[in-house]
Length: 307
Image: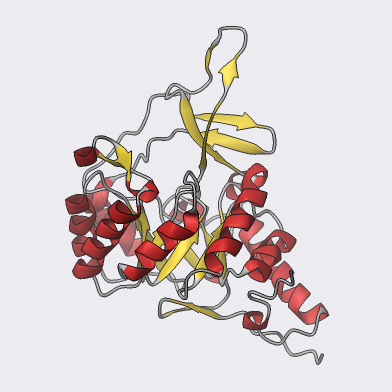
């Protein structure tokens, strides 16, 4: 191959990304926190901390526990709320050349719809990522993302309130993630991202008490990568919309596995806490891999797994 740089640009739901590497919601704050550490405009996209209609304090500490090859968190979706986000966070986000995606969550279909309607009117937000791993209070506490009909109802309500691209973040805590993926695609999702954290817990053997105040939390990091990779492969064979892979990505080699499995883009999550430059290193590594293997366009790598 010539010395020409390979094309790493991808399109997700109509959004043009200069490269397929995003930062995952909940691991990158509202972006400004990382401004002194990395070039934010080098990223493919930034997904901000999950937003609710009202400010949320989150769970009491301890809220984070290190595990073998991973991390348990029970932050409780702490966030500033949509009003403060628009007034205090968006002005900075508008200065970036990197697309910004708002992650939203609610405890009812109406809350999701209300958030989508608010964000529709905010300039500088390129798309929505809908976190459906939240309890549906009206249905007795069931999580939207484990029920195909509940998941579809959320996505349909959001779809009616916005013209922005809608990415649906899928829960791995299900029997068959492909069923949920199909249901949200049919309800109007422009893309799906997966996986969210796996449910887990840790115990202090001296006190015989949970190490998280919330008892259980979400497991992320390298430990979940094989599960995430398997689910991305399953979903990519099931839906026609783009698939965004998440779960334990630390190096370019990890991301490349997800592309081969069928992901169009990836998100870097827990690794941001270890090394803020991880996303940039992954981008550089992807470019190097494409060059070394004579691949002119990253699209030519997506879904090339041979079985």
